[in-house]
Structures are given as C-alpha cells and as structure tokens.
Image (cartoon, rainbow, N blue to C red; front, side, top):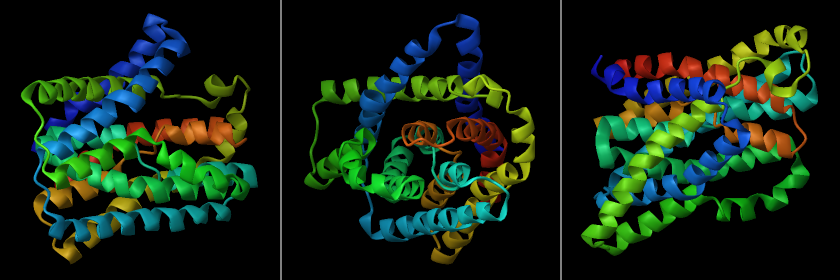
Length: 306
C-alpha cells in the first residue's frame, strides 16, 4: 500500500500530460521539443547525479544485472510468440519490441520516488546495461540490414553516456563542488516532471488518431495479439524477475528495482524506431499507450508481492 501511494504523483503527471496536450493546443512541435530536452539534457543529468552521489556495492551488482537480463531475455523470446497470430510480417517486426523494451523515464522516476538517489543509481546501472541489447534486438528484428548503424546509435545514446560518465566518476571517487551538485539536483527535478508529462502527452487512444486512417476493424482483428503482448510485458517479465530475485536472494532495494524494471511499460521510442524503419508505427503507438495505462495498475501490484 505504501509503494502504491508513493507512485500516485508519478502516474498523476502522466495523466496530466495526456490531458494537457489536447486542452492547451501546444502542438507536436512543443512536445517534441520537451522530449528532446528531457532525452538529451535532463535525464542524462539525473543519471549522472544519482550515480555520482551513491556508494555502489559492485559485489552485489552481478545478481542484480543477471536478474534483469533474465527478465529481458524472457520478453525477447516470448515476443516471438506473436507469430502464432494472424498478423503481417511488417506488423510482427514492429510489435515484437513491445514485448521487452522499457520506458526508462518512468523507471527512474519510480526508483527515485521509492528509494531516492540510491534507487536512481541502482536503476541507472540496470538501464545502462539493458539498453544496448534491447535496442539491438529491436533493430535486428525490424530489419537486419539496419544493424550496421546500431553501435553508432548506442554510442551516441544520451542515457548511456550519462550512465557511463556517472559510473566513471563514481569509480574515480570524484567529489563535485556544492554548486555543481545543486545544479545537477535542479536538472534532475525537472527531468522527472517533464519526462512524465511528455510520456502522457505521447499517449494515443485510437489508431485512427495516429495515422488518420480508419483501421478500427483491423485493430479489433488484432486484439488477441495485443493482449498477448501486454501479458508478456506486464505479467511474464515481472514474474521471471520476481522468481530470479528470490533465487538469487537479492536485497530489498535490488529486488524492488529489478521488479520495477521488468514491469515497466514499453518505451515510447519504440514508435520512433518503427516509423524510421518503415514499420507499423500506428500499431506500435497504440500498444505503447495501452501498456502505459495498464502499467499504472500492475506496477503497484507487483511491488506489493515483495
């Protein structure tokens, strides 16, 4: 119950973002700018701030990473179950990533709400290690010929850069002056609020609203595949993480963080990737929206299991 109450402000910001987009008429250009600010500046600062301030127990990081990797692998493998449904190859390659990709913004916000800077630092480690295999798998499934650009894209990923810089500073024992720490704290506060508002503003509640074409009948015909994906992302992955956390005997903080990671909704960047690579962006956007809204219910339930 305490965990659920702690998450209310974060989920409220997502819903507020969804309400502000149509009511304020700020347009795609405004929200696109907010997303870029969060992605390139604010969230890297949040990651660096959490890592540079926290003492990391590297001996305990191994089981944490192994548990997260096991959950991610389960999502990737189970995602291939989409082939059991009557969907086109284009839709399969686009939607497969929705079974395992995760929204780092929501994960870092929740980790900070529950465990402050230590939670952010722990989630940053998990995100930093899991982003490369998740992104490479998504690109490889969408189009093998696009894999040649994966390493370049990962090397320029701001979240990975922020994580690596924070880890390097932590290992080197860097102590930043107080003004620098205050600046990082201010940027971190802005990252959480703006990041969650942007997630909410990106929600799409009908496929027609996304691509302007009446696909309601097609969407109804793919309901089973959509439900399967939601079950994989919001039930199967957290269940695997919960089992591995118990098997490895993870401490409470690490068990919380890895379960949050596994239970996160699909990353909004999955839509961008599908669009760029000629996939079914409309189907991906709808799946992300449904997953995000349901995750507001399932994440507190999973945290109540521990």
